[in-house]
Length: 146
Image (tube, rainbow, N blue to C red; front, side, top):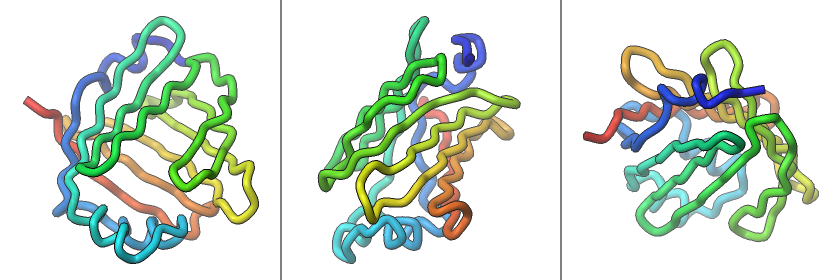
């Protein structure tokens, strides 16, 4: 089970450094996002806020035209999560080897499993999004907002 102490170094606001993003458009395409939305998303510079309490971790992602908030139990219990476009997934969280890992198993046909791994390296938050068991891996680098 993850603890607040494991999560504390990740807490705060983080700004994406788009110049260091890899495979983001490929990730969006693999997820079925249409061309125009992919182009808009690629231009945004999202802010991710990570917070926690004694029982849950919360990820708030703000990307210009959209905000998504995901709150997951620290004990690894799966939560039925709603996605934009009407999809749903069973999503769970764990902390392991200094990494925050979120796994989403789709409920709807046609959706793809995603694993989001976040770790701190050299004061930056590195986020890897693995879609379809390694078919596409997107890397995003976040810097702590001042």
